[in-house]
Amino acid sequence: MSVRDVRVIPHWIDGAEYPSASGRTAPVFNPATGQVTAHVALADQAEIDAAIASARAGFETWSGYSIARRQAVVFAFRELLNARKRELAEIITSEHGKVVSDAMGEILRGQEVVELACGFPHLIKGAYSENVSTGIDVYSTKQPLGVVGIISPFNFPAMVPMWFFPIAIAAGNAVVLKPSEKDPSAALWLAALWKEAGLPDGVFTVLQGDKAAVDGLLESPVVESISFVGSTPIAEYIYETAAQHGKRVQALGGAKNHMLVLPDADLDLVADSAVNAGYGAAGERCMAISVVLAVEPVADELIGKITDRIARLRIGNGAAGLEPDGVEPDMGPLITGIHRSKVAEYVDIAEADGAEVVVDGRGFQVDGHQDGFFFGPTLLDRVPTTSRASTEEIFGPVLSVVRVASYDEGLELINSGRFGNGTAIFTNDGGAARRFQNEVHVGMIGINVPIPVPVAYHSFGGWKKSLFGDAKAYGVHGFDFFTREKAITSRWLDPASHGGINLGFPQNN
Image (cartoon, rainbow, N blue to C red; front, side, top):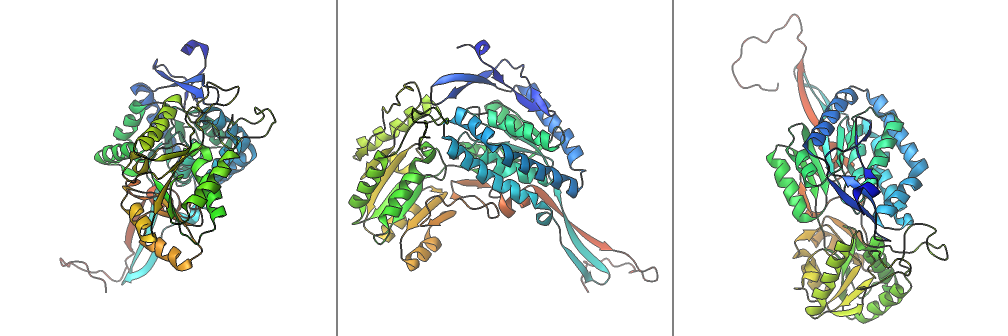
């Protein structure tokens, strides 16, 4: 199908859709059908420059707004989003493939950050210390950075940008968002919603594109910071390149998340949690559980329970009303055919390394959607810890079981990995859980909770190769990241008293 046969998804610059003249595009698929539904513009240098210039002008306007006026716009955006979130969920499903209820879930988690941003005046206020030395006061203020860049992944086209832009905008910055070229339409919908909420033109800009757009943001002297979520190799590149150009960086990378199951755990709860965390969104989550560390003798019973639950899962087109009985499926397709092949290769690797394929999702098809990018839930047992299937991020519906002899062996496997994003322990032993939370080298920990994504007033981010840069996402970290602090030392002289000349180092007295 040629570009002329489908629409070309544009940029959003100066408060309106901005058609591209670059001549470069990339296909956008409906993953459930495998059909190309649109092409997305890939920016050239002129369009990159136009987006950044528009954002710079928008910042000059927006940063001059009073706190009260900024807060009113953020509140209006929250209300519009809450009223129309179903529209956004259906857009996400059409380009990502996750089921609508899952898309709604990601929007609601993103909306938590919008709601946190509504209370931003408290979080950007400074401090005041009176009479620190005789007649001298010290106080601080927090000011916005300017133009900030956000580079977001395909797996959460609404939630991940919302981890960053509500806080950045509330704090007085202008945002240039570079969404994934695989599902770019959600960003345009959000841009239009900001305009409806009263945000001045230029304050929220969408720059569609590929590596050229990314590098344009990383290298621009106007862009003050970069926020990124994606794979670890790209996160490292983003961090190094942006830092070389003098920017603040928060770059969240990949993961290999483990669930440690102790023999005293409720295995029905464990099985439900493993299926939910391993196969939700077809495993395309940076917080997905991909390895179950089963402390013997529970592995056989647990595998039986997981297998029973897999048999009851419904896999199909995530768009509501497209299933024959009108019931929404539990899991949709993967994002592209290329990614599906990559996931299948990891199952091949595990099998070649000696793992047992208990449930095989390779070659899975959905009736009526034979060209869709579906991959069935897959369960592997006895995966060698040296296998790439055990150590690398698969990002698909593949759950591996690794049998361990003890808590200590399981803990060592987690801590020896290069990632440190999320982990969980399932146990009824409070002492073991407390020991685990103190001893594990991971940034986000669940205790009988399979996907421990912190609420908005805490912060999201891992350790080791899962996080690069100066701050975690959202929470207090987010407000610190998107503002600069000034400390002012002030003295108003008593007309009858002058300090005289003193060349010594200033002292407090």
